[in-house]
Image (cartoon, rainbow, N blue to C red):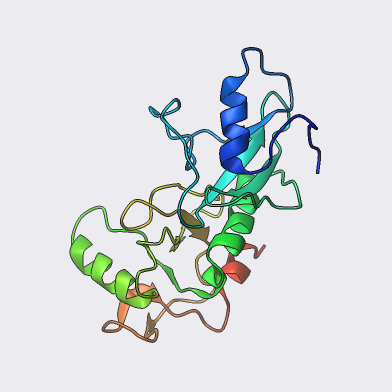
Length: 202
């Protein structure tokens, strides 16, 4: 990992250091714009360490192409590897903050019209109890394989990420996760493949 000797470690400390610099040299790490800790419209809001592990992403300012690190708002953890794509850094951060997220069911996105409450009830029932309140992510099937961007604050409740999963290879059938809501095409069958496997399928 490329590091600057004068920089502190951890997302909160690094971002506060970045804010403190009048002239920001190339390569200083900071929380990536729009990600937790650096939300649009709140760039200068007070930033303190979270009371629980929450994922975010660091980037090196002024460096092209961009380099990213997974990071945590609740401790000083940072991914050992630098990534060229923000999604990979977000995934690494979730491995730290929300172990087991890769085995969760991938669901269809929230409907733009129609049974939004039904969708929310079924998704909440299909995920672990209290998952979204703890800032856990939701995995949504993106019809467009090029749509690979992680969406911060887009999980139910607004704390966690919406992470992309590729559509199933075969036509989906209703699933019955355990514990599960009534079988519904809102939660397609995983067909023996984890969401992460579909995420990185060619």
